[in-house]
Image (tube, rainbow, N blue to C red):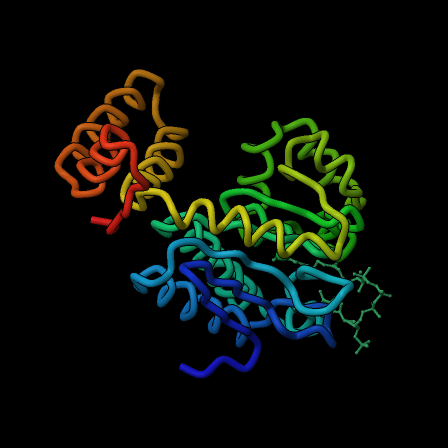
Length: 260
Ligand code: CAA
């Protein structure tokens, strides 16, 4: 499939997926969501892709939200379907077997912040502005934001952000645990790619299982989570990556993982 609104580059196992609609600050309309869904589905199946960085084109925005012009004329049914489509994209990222970093290079608002929150973690420019302005538009976050933000930073801070619609800066986002690290704008993408390259070099089956254990374990009791972790941990001893990783350590050489 040819993408009109996405740029995709894969180098040495690291894919950079750029939302490329800077004229509208990379706002997510239906066509763009459809492209994102197809692209992410493909990247998850592509064995040459080991880690993904998602960012926005231009200097101003990561993604300034869902497309307000498109939403302004939607019926309740269309709004529901649009929300479900956005949620499907977010869940696709969460279920990918590869790590996904959001490189938030500017505004991450509404659906844009929801996209960043769906990623495994967020690196941001120190000029980033994050927020959920939906209540100022007479709606509420609809691409998983109420669920993901409250789980990440707790209900009190999530309530404040979602009920006021006010943006926060990178420093506060870092202090609140939304963002893992802040960088000068010109360094952000390189730092995100560097981290992605580190993750691209490890045993990808172990990483995929760890991602699965963390995500699914959050919805279990601690005891069930421990049991689930133990079963995945055990399965890894049947992989070539485990033999290679531990063999390389014992033989004092660099492991050459095959991802199987
Ligand atoms: N949807 C559609 N178009 C958008 C947009 C959006 N979310 N955000 C920006 N744009 C467009 C603007 O309309 C403008 O287009 P025109 O030149 O054709 O008028 C262009 O992008 C540039 O934007 P501005 O001129 O507004 O730029 P600015 O620097 O003055 O302001 C901003 C930047 C503060 C981010 C401002 O654009 C803004 O407030 N955008 C809307 C943010 C928002 O409310 N997002 C939440 C959307 S609702 C949502 O996402 C629901 C959900 O949970 C799924």
